[in-house]
Each structure stands twice: as C-alpha cells, then as structure tokens.
Image (tube, rainbow, N blue to C red; front, top):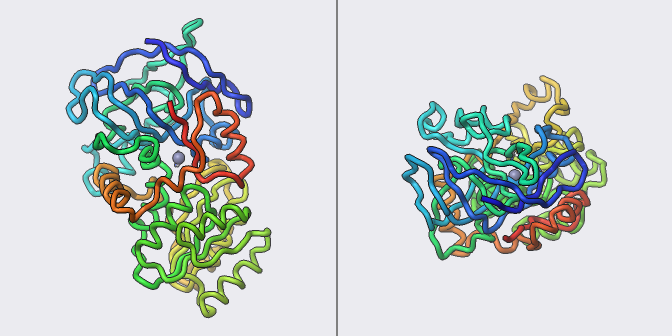
Length: 375
Ligand code: CXF
Ligand code: ZN
C-alpha cells in the first residue's frame, strides 16, 4: 500500500514528505494506522547526526494508533485494536525479559540495523523503489507503521491516542526513572537537570513519590516555569556556572546535597550537566544518567575518588527501567485518576507537514515540552 511519510536523507537537511510503498506485515508483525506520534529529543539527535543512523530513514519512535492488519502468528492484538508503540520491543523469552527488565531485552541488539528483525525492510520510495530504513523498528513519522507485535501494547479504546502516545518513550523514560530505578521515600530530595519532556515526567514521578524538595535545573526560564507547574519546589537557571548552582543546592538542602539526581540532557552539554547532577547529590547519594545524545563522545567528568570518597552511585537508566506491559497500564490508571498529567505535557499539536519546523523548535530549546503530530 501507499502512504505519506517524512524521510530523512541527510543529517541536518529537511525531511522530505513523500509517498512510500509499505509491505504488509509478515509473521509476528502488525500494521498500525498511526493516530499520533511525539517529537522526542532523540529524534532530533538522529537528525543532527549526534546519534548516527543509516539513511534514508523514517524517524519517530513513540506513537499510538489502530491495528489495521496482523501477520501470521500474532496473538496479542487484532484488527481494530488501539495500541501504543514503544521503541524497545520485549520478546518475553530472553533472560532480561524474564528477570523483570524487558527494557534490556536482547532484541535491543537488533535495533540499530534499520531493518526488521528478519533483516529485510518493509518500506520503499514509491517513485523508484529505493529501500528506506526504519528507526527502532517502528518509524512513526508515517501514516502507517509495520512493526513487530513485540513493539506494541493494546490499550482501551476510550483513551486519547494523542496523549497516551507519550507513554511509548518520553513519559515512561522520565517517570520510570524516578519511580522504578530509584525509590524516593517521602520527604527525600531530588535534583532534576534538564526539564524537557523527560525531566518534566521525572518531576511528576518524584512528586507522586512524596519527594520533599524537587530542584529543577535548566538553561531556559520557560522550562523552569513548566517544571514548577509539574511539581518542582525550587528552580535554578543554569547560566553555565556549576559552582553557583551547587552552592544554591547546598543552601536549599542544609548543606547536604540531594538524595538523588537525574540527568536528562545528554546533548553536547553533557560534561557540564552530568557534573552538576553528580555534585548535586549528598554522600551516599545516587545519580541517574538518563539523557542520551552525543553517544560517541566520552563526557563524564568524574574521578574514581569522586565516587569512593563520597560513596556515590551513578546509574544509567534505559526507558525508565520500565516493564512496559505492566507499567504503561499503571500509568494509564494514574492518568485517569488525574494523578499524572499527560495533557499538560503536550505543548503543541501539529501535522506531519510541520515536522521540520517542530525539529527546529526542539533545537531552539525554550519553547516546547512535547510536540505531538496528529494524523
Ligand atoms: C532513547 C534511548 C536510546 C535509544 C533511542 C531512544 N530514549 C529516548 O528517547
Ligand atoms: Zn524518545
């Protein structure tokens, strides 16, 4: 079948909206008519080349839609079902899926190829048959996605797909970091460095866990305003003076530092923001590294003594350490009770044709929490 999609041919060049020929799902795959997809900073890292990928490629890695067709052997969804698409499939059979960490599923090793799990592609340029790579098996910047059954989760039909699409990456990554990877006790203190979509979700997680002080740090004043709205008790503008920021955090925490910190920047400022997050925590505290960006650059600015003398822990977290088949339903429950705010995270809705402008707005950094493309 034919569909419209946004194709990236070269880094930092506008994506081209064009006709793509999409093959039907093979065994274990499903076809989804996309309803909505979020613009995540990781997509922008693929666009800028900070996270290299084979091109041409259709980006987009969080979404929601309706199943239109299923391949042989598919059992968990059927035509007409509503689903959330996630960027990390879970096979349910590997060691990691079996030990409570489907976010580390062995299928992750196959996500970089741009091909489906059988090594072939389902997408070709309609005009000449040129093969198009997929992103993380789901390529959601397209009217339809053919992806593995293992990448989708059935959800109830009354839910707004243009909001719950955030559960496929951004919200779950941030909220899960704050609520799965660490266990904040009521009254404990947290520093959140980087207050885009992920950071704001983490602030919601920290608040719901009963954190006593949630200190938001960001370059942009607008992001700090949003951070306060989602539960930050303190906001510090990052004017590239780490010493001043740490001094302020010490003042807020009676000279102790926070129990936890989370770093959500992961871009070319990581050496600065990781330094802030690391120094923000108290003796024996835990820092979570969640942001990704300059994946090939070594930026982590600490010495062994920084760890040992203060007995600090630094932990990486992927996809919020989430078990998406049980965590996403939990988050939906919290959303329906009004305990988490997905609606407020969506700062703007747009069409697929607006995608290049949406990426520029992410790069500008100050305007948006999450932009959602509706089909
Ligand atoms: C990332 C994590 C690394 C792979 C791409 C997606 N998470 C959030 O965007
Ligand atoms: Zn993402």
